[in-house]
Amino acid sequence: MQNVLNFIEQNKLTSPGERIGVGVSGGSDSMALLHFLHENAERLDIEVVAIHIDHGIREESRDEANFVISKCREMGVRAYKFRIEAPKLAKEKGISVETAAREGRYAIFESLFRKDVIDKLALAHHLSDQAETILMHIFRGAGMAGARGMEAMRDGKYIRPLLTTSKEEILDYANLHNLDYVEDSSNKDNSYSRNYLRNVVLPEISKKWPGAIKAVCQFGATLKEDDDFISSQVYDDAVIYEDKEAKIPLSYFLYKKPIASRLIIKVLKNIGVKVDFERKHVELLMALALDGENGKRLSLPFDVVAVKDYEYLTLYNRKIEVPKFNCEFKCGEFEVPGMGKMIVKRVKDFSPREGVIYLDYRKVPKTAQWRFREDGDVFTKFGGGTKKLKSFLIDKKVPQRKRAFIPVLAEGNNILAIAGLEISESVKIEDVPTAYSVEFHF
Image (cartoon, rainbow, N blue to C red; front, top):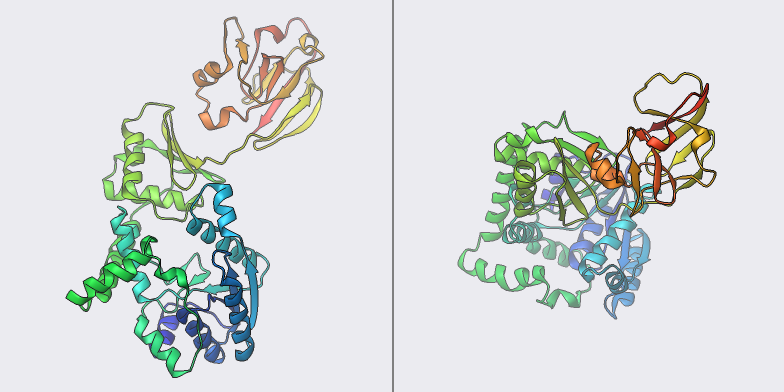
């Protein structure tokens, strides 16, 4: 497999001195990859370690784990073994066993990176896997970004040295070096989409067109070149990023569709959404930006929520839980969970300042507390007129996702002050030399 060394060096998949973990299931592909990298460790100047994860799906999985550890000892390769209960995780989270297994597997990989156990992780995806991935993405409606297939290196740490190597070459290598391996019985279960494609569809296509697998992969490589060029013309300078949230100016959606759609994908990746969205989901986002009503929400796969916020389309993670927050009314500096800090102090200067409110402390009931918004809250505006707090925040153009995190000074459901925004008529300053200022830092 000389082409594998060339592929590694051309794509700079490894660097001298790195510790490369190899995801080893015990199958022919991963055993061949482990052996190959171990045999060429000196040439590549790397250290190779094996990572085996038992997903707890099949009865024979414990035996396979023991098999991998045994073979690693024979090779003289250090091995790490882990077990997750994918069926249990799937049931608890309401997801498929496949998805639960993948999430659990990558959670372990990420922990190994954080602990500096490995520098990179080598995965044994090969040429046929690439063809399957491209076709599956096409069949489910992915755009060019999905149909380009897997990358030789992802996120600078997941590498695929066998991506241009055929299954036949891998089996020949395993036979040449008398490598033992196990067959995963679930690979024959055609109820799984990938297995159906691998065991039924591609063999039939290859009978008619023997070069089909290579042709599909070449198609993906061509798309990658085109996609990379178009993506290089996409700029997100005016996008506002805050942790796992992004605000995209609506003006960006006036660009031609190839640019606007790639902007969405780029923004999603920048807020941590690494998977490829289907074309239909990108089109839904574009329609929301251009034609949706203000405040309209759109829930998408992978825990993404989109909201049209006035002049922006905001994308964020739906798994936002509002923490508990209760704080008595007094002078001091207070942390506001999920938002920032609030500074309350007594002052003599009531000059207007952005983000600062002033209130008459004598009018604040002793039972009043700072907290987050609750259902039923009402607010009497400065100057009169009572409204539901939610309606007032909408009038003030506070983005929907932030309304739950703004501290309010409340007595029951009566809101006396909204940090950073406004005070109620009931606590306005009247003939007093000193008052409380409330400064809220988002």
